[in-house]
Image (cartoon, rainbow, N blue to C red; front, side, top):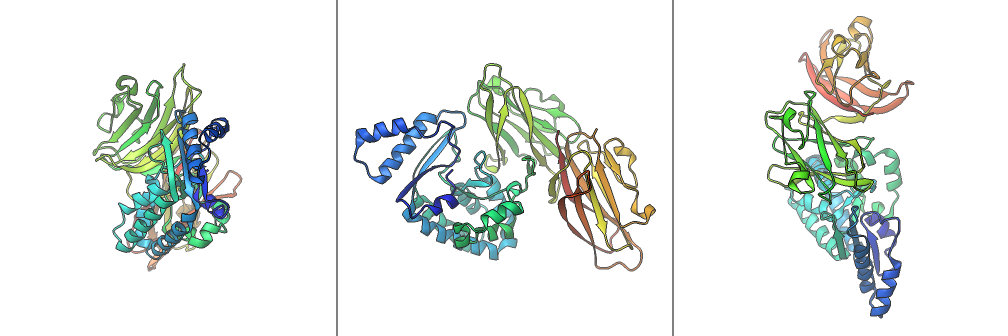
Length: 471
């Protein structure tokens, strides 16, 4: 695939490279058409040969539902782009605190090809970041990198993928930012030259779950939009609201006043449907499902999902999903809750555990389920049959509390709330607690974070984690 890091390794082997930003179909390059056209137009310059290959790929596969994006890359310009990306990374790393949210939003809004494992469109990222940062030095670095990028992408074409601009770069969500992938990325020649990974580690990356479920903040007035390339095919986004009700463009009634929907695509004839969050919508987690059911349609359909601002600009490109005909899948958890959370996945038998070392501190762990029902070790009854709780720490005389997911629990997002209740004695300036997720055998599954909570105000409650469960 046309990832800059891979192309960079080949920059001394040829004057021009041809690569696709998205996966090629299994049939591969149309060598028969390429060779026939080359023979008919012989001789050609190296760049013209690359353009010929791109044109023939688009002609052969461009109308396929997967879409097509191919580019000719001028290797003589790659060192300049690398140098300017290194300057950008260095400046952003120094100002990571101020730039973190801008970087994460720009990553989330950039086109992410199917099966890219963390790569997103480089041109899109540079443009998205430039609209968000106010730092004049970073704006200059972005302008320089954009100029160099335009020189590198000598020629590009796309079909059905308007956000694809030619080449990708490692701009992952948290799903593709684990320690193993970072260890693989660290020694790459491009990263050694730019310290790109150091920048990403400094700013952080947008959240997503390890199961592939996207996660994003959904502001009132924003639309979540699903689009595909054939209006004759029946694709539909369905939203589960935190009040337990569901709605879609085909059946909007139960979410009236909460989410307003577009017209059903089978009526409008447009291969796009959306839902817009109302300003009086209940606070919580909204689960987006995608369904595809067309008896005469292809066996699978590719759907792109974006989160769009009230004025129409893309705020987050949540990515692509491949949906089997006659099926549905959970695609995203959208939340209008205030604050940031650690994101994780759990399954029946897993337990989330809060522990602290100071026996004089009193912490409580609370769970709010997808239906907005809340329980804790002190008050477990509301979540009976959904969550099993430990004994309350104050009763048991322990410095830990836990909550275990029951096999009959509903699917969706479970919010983990941590309350700092009291301190037996003169309270310190802060108290520290650890939040971890363990599997059914008691093995550590995920470190959800260290919580440093201020003393002196009781009780104080903090939204610590969002755990998602889907069968």
